[in-house]
Image (cartoon, rainbow, N blue to C red; front, side, top):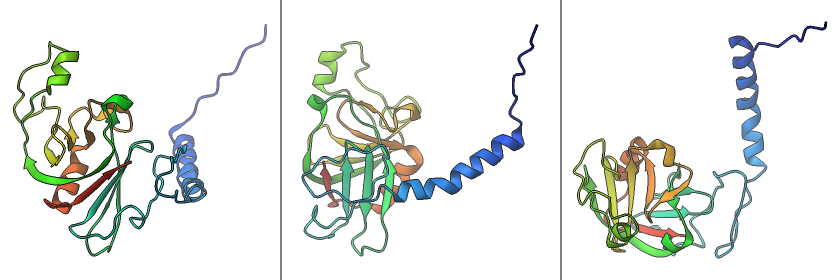
Length: 194
């Protein structure tokens, strides 16, 4: 009878393979850096595609946020164009819930409260009518309110949602990343969802 030798990966072997991957990953990412033309759909296996603000915004007055719903990323440029921030995000569940186009930040709130929209209550009447700030709040710790009614860029306490189609229309970020974006963005920051 032949015995099958099952291989066991040690911590050192795992660490070595993880290190090798982290060294190779930037090269893999750079291979996908072509920037799509405005108005085209850019589908990639790498969600962190880079964009330039030019072609999407006429200027960077008050800063600019570009949300790539296909790539599930949010790009932020400050008014002085001194850096770019890229964040992974959650996006709406379906095309019917996805609103694309231009808007702006009209209000900022730390510790937002939440009420389901009429459409959400129609789809799920069992939702709570109100959730105050705290760990059960679907808006997380910070919210940027857009000029479109019911639409926000906000945090989430459910980190499994990030990088997925999981929202009812809003754009969600990790709480620590919405806190950073909240400090960078202003009322009046331009927002474009593509």
